[in-house]
Amino acid sequence: MKKMKLVVSTILTLAFLAGPAAGLAAEAKTKEKAKAYPLKTCLVSDEALGEMGDPYTFVHEGQEIKLCCKSCLKDFNKNPKKYLKKLEAAQARQGKAKK
Ligand SMILES: [Zn+2]
Image 1 (spheres, rainbow, N blue to C red):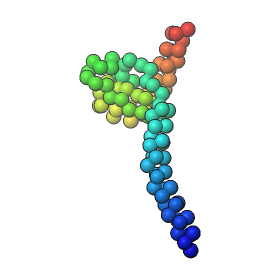
Image 2 (image 1 turned 135 degrees about the vertical axis):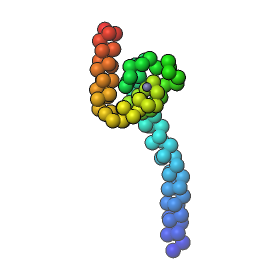
Image 3 (image 1 turned 30 degrees about the horizontal axis):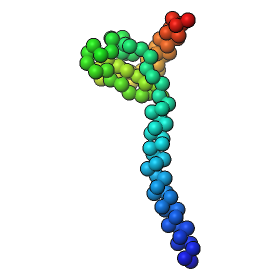
Image 4 (image 1 turned 45 degrees about the horizontal axis):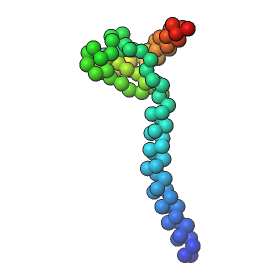
């Protein structure tokens, strides 16, 4: 019976130790995964970033997005697919420009 108790407490200790560490690892992974925003303009309004104050930055499905202001976020959330397509097109254009 003594052995059983030891096993249970070992499992509990491991779960306690692994819990927060696993959470941190997952967080670091999502940060690492995010692709950098390639444009110098707001994805929604095409305004130059930084002209209207600090750009609003967030990560959408692993892609970093920068907007000129927080009110553009409402427009982005109305139709994220449209803006992600726009971002892809802009990235393709940039890729061509480099070659
Ligand atoms: Zn804006």
